[in-house]
Image (tube, rainbow, N blue to C red; front, top):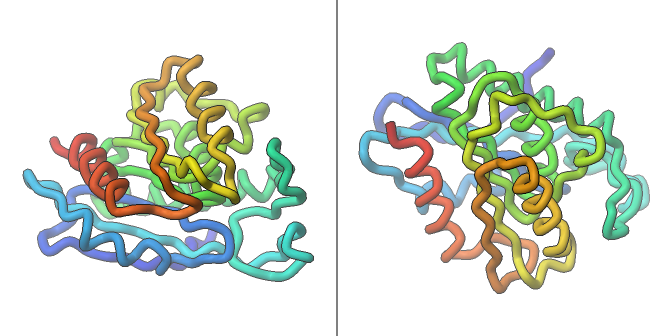
Length: 220
């Protein structure tokens, strides 16, 4: 498998932790690169941030236009109709990046997998099915697209999961974040869920909460 091209932001000290962060539909790996300076971690946590680029594919809801996407979205109903095969393929690409970081000397329990919107749906699938315990899973303004088909691995049963959503999100309604939280809570995953008075975006208060989460799960 060819690895996805990525934007990588190295810490000032040799990396001893990694955050792999998947962007949303139509964006690219540079989308969340500007947040890194706001996530300065302390207490000996030196995190490498890896922002992969999704391939360009036709997207049905956008008239078949080609754009960076992790999978095709067939319709925008509340239940979402997506190409699950493409989503699972993207999840395997994310897992390949995790394995690369392990090969570079960062153990799985020092790796956080994160995703925004469409990238968050891939992060759910990749992280929950992965067979080595991760440090954390971070899902922002997203949904659990494969809730009916996913086959979770017990390795993540105790992995902290952070879910953030905008209460005014017109793209991914907040109900979808609530549904993911309920699905995970019913299966006894340790979930932290929080909403913000915002649309389909990130905000300054949220970045502070993300920083606190990363600090918590990556502090040895």
